[in-house]
Image (tube, rainbow, N blue to C red; front, side):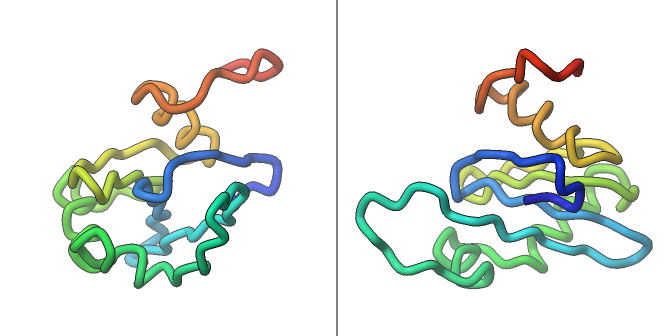
Length: 110
C-alpha cells in the first residue's frame, strides 16, 4: 500500500517503490496477496539482496534520473531499470500500466 490509503498497486516482487521527501528515501515494502508455495515473507533488505542489489544502490540510480526530485520512483531490481513516476501514489500505477503491468481501472480518470 502506498502513502495514500486509497491507492493500492499490484506488481511483481522485483518492482520496488520509493518515495523521495526532502533528502530522505523511503522504500515502500508491500504486502503479499498471492503465495501459492507458502514461501516465507522476506524483509525488504533480503528482497534487494536476492536480486543482487541494495536500497543504497537503487537510491543512487534514482538520484541519477533527475537529481533526486521529490516524488515516487519505481525500480525493476531484476533488470536494473529505474523510473520517476510523479508526485502522487496514483502516478506509480500509471507508470506500471505504461510498462505493461496491470490494466487501467475503468472507474478512475487517469
